Image 1 (tube, rainbow, N blue to C red):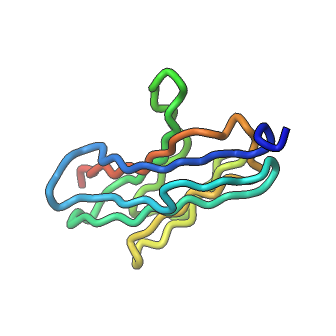
Image 2: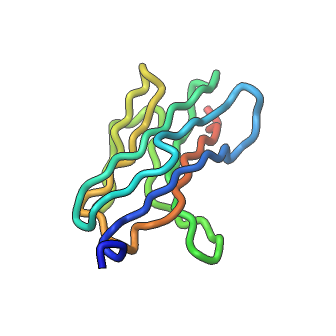
Length: 118
């Protein structure tokens, strides 16, 4: 029963548009959360581009990436339903916040970076 109430959130890294100068690093690598708790997943990034977008995705059991939320480099932190991001451009970090987590939130989460045209 306790196992059913645990929420496993595992993070991994992905870069949507490969470049030696662009990178993302996520932490923690794995986290266990009780049903109903809020959770935060961190992503540090590095890019030389002035304009870019950061994305959060969740991988479904069949391997499909499901879009959660995005953040443009020139925008304030955003929110979409139970999901929000805390964007710290000066620190080059973005945090995905999940409010009132559910068992269905279990999975592998990906942070991605995409260059934008000026």
